[in-house]
Image 1: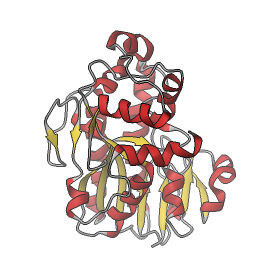
Image 2: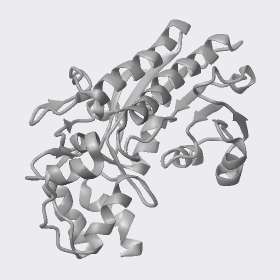
Image 3: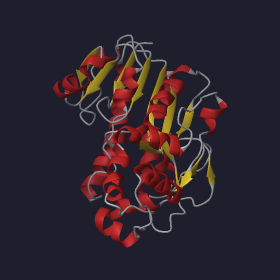
Image 4: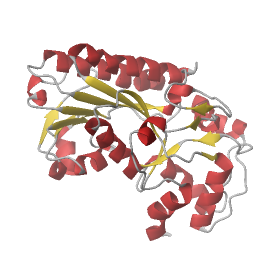
Length: 303
């Protein structure tokens, strides 16, 4: 399968690239991409997601597109400018990507586009499969608009899958890296009362889910890219504390995190009991279905 990947230099991108055969990578900074992932790519093409569609030659012979690009939601405070970057990088970037497909001489068979469980908003104890309705907060609105732009590719005869990703756990970055320092200092603990559900996924399984979606023609529409065993925040912090051999009993109050992170604190306290129904129904087998095994694989070498 000849493939094109956006966002190849992020946390997930290199894992996806390793599973592909000499993919084309489009990047805002081709020189930096060549230094970091050049050995994983067949070719690297420059593309500014906000500046217009990728060059037509990027799509030559491409059968599958993996769209991972987007501004991090966890970096910095959510100022008006940062929220605009979060939204535009996803909505305008995806619109321009699909426009590139529209202009290409041949169309890919499938587009697997990133999305997020932020689509669902804060839902308490409700079990959320792919058919659940969207939430009504900032991230939910972004995800709805983001997915709408991806589904525009269906007008071109392209099968579209949107992967609603949970908290990605892996070595060398992401949410876990931000949590390690307080835990290693003995100051880790649950967020608030710790009863909120945390939809998570090991980065290896997430990369495998992208390929699973591309290779199974029966999959179209949303796919919850989360582990099959969501945990409450208190369960997660206990498992992390056990793996690090550190206490995990100091709760982080909402007001403190609101002062530290601003509006993003709402995301940390949201409860989302997300179930990967489509993945399970189509035969996907998770390598890391439970949180203890996932944390052991990521942290044991350094513990």
